[in-house]
Image (cartoon, rainbow, N blue to C red; front, side, top):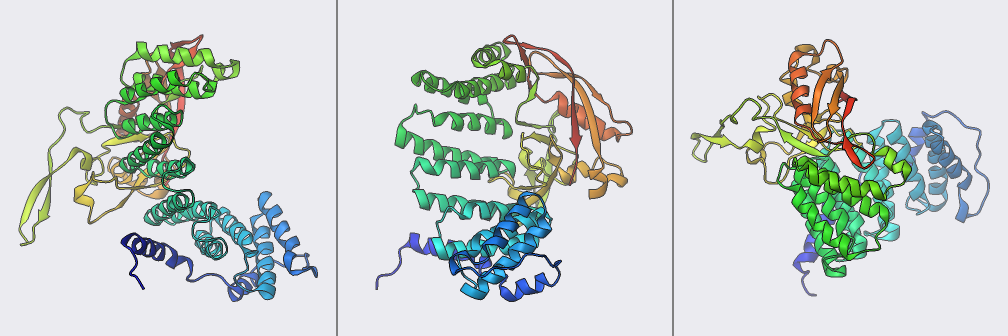
Length: 480
């Protein structure tokens, strides 16, 4: 017999590392019976039906309760359904997959993330057995387990599950298929949400290469990649997103029949990038082109200012960046002091907030993973750190440094809600900033004022022209 090739060995190791937790501690009939002892009895009975439809009524009732938000009743029915199936067809019947996913969703909705993970693992294991390792049916399960991992503070496990999601899609469709683009997008969004901007950018390079090889350098599939790359440059504090966006113009010119919504999104992204760079005359021209393509309802929506995704460093707000050093021991036990880079200062626990991020994400993730290659001093000691705040996000331990003792805990932070008012000028700059909430700690007031001053918004567009908007209001929270 020939020896396995290196790629095959790598695949086996990857699958064993990821799937091992999935096949251990899975709830079987005995576990289900124990759980059912704690549930309320229901009036539903299992009818005598053939093996193809075992427990179908209970499963359907479970789904109905879940849809209506009655998660406890949904769990009761899913468990009874699973027990009936196991009694007739065994613990590994493929009929159990949907009920296991239903249990995962329902426990997740009730905040029992340990149970959600347990049943998600079983659902995925059953899917492996029935449909193979690369079954796309796993994607929903993986997303649920990602959320459960985050809720339990395990960002590294969430990261692994999202990478496995891409692994499945690439092997299902092929590495160089356009059909794999959505999965690349999905992992890329996870990287953005978890602060791994460098990794997200690398995935965009992979997507661009696939589109170029399959459809050419001017194919419309490049447009969302270009828009996302420009946003990532702003999030990474790298100049110059407007230059990246200009590459979209050739794609627009080459594809005259693109839908209006695609052109609108591209022109708005162009305007945002030029606004961020202070090139407001050019930005106004692109906003005008977008406005002209819109229907009346879209134009109305554009009449309100909108924040632009970005990140800004605050360490130079008092002049020259401080030069800091960190002690390190060499292999002989001698202590040396090496300079801490500006990037590393952004998360250093002894400093006040050194940066803010405005990711425009709906999620309220409170964990970030260290971005690749940026924090050398933390590589051996820390992969995950806490973040806090919405819509503006800060490093948790740096926010703590500027707050009175009563706020330096999760409960205190969660109660800290700040109403802000400001004017967005026609150039996208913010001024007339007011803190409307009384009794906010003075250092927090100063931080939020500085944060807003450094922010850039897409100005309101009325009759195709950028205009000033007074008394724009947002609510900054610090839920942990």
